[in-house]
Image (cartoon, rainbow, N blue to C red; front, side):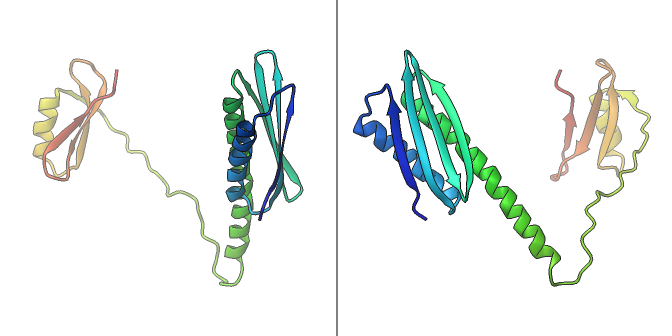
Length: 174
């Protein structure tokens, strides 16, 4: 669709460059929604405050944002950025909804059960050892990794076997 964009200025010398910039930035929002029919940009300057207000009408829903910085181009960028994020959210919601309805129709299959697999905690008694000791122990065992308490720092560390057969060692960042 072609979106109708109006740019108005209050207490501001609207240069053709500024107007073109605002139009260009807003036009770019069209790709998030084919139903964006019109957009309005209002630029206001009060002393050092350069305020850009951007509103986009998407199928009767108005999404708007207002930003002010000390520089009009930056205000336009930020306001358009905010509207863009809201439009994306709006699109995702519509999209999710459509997908859900499509999935439930037609194939007669039971809905997938998305509960995560049960995780059964293994209670580990952590042995105190040096990383070297852990490496020796791990080397001699079929286990893929060994959790231990570091002899000097007493923090929990993990020695593990890498894909290439060498041993790795993980210590928490202090």
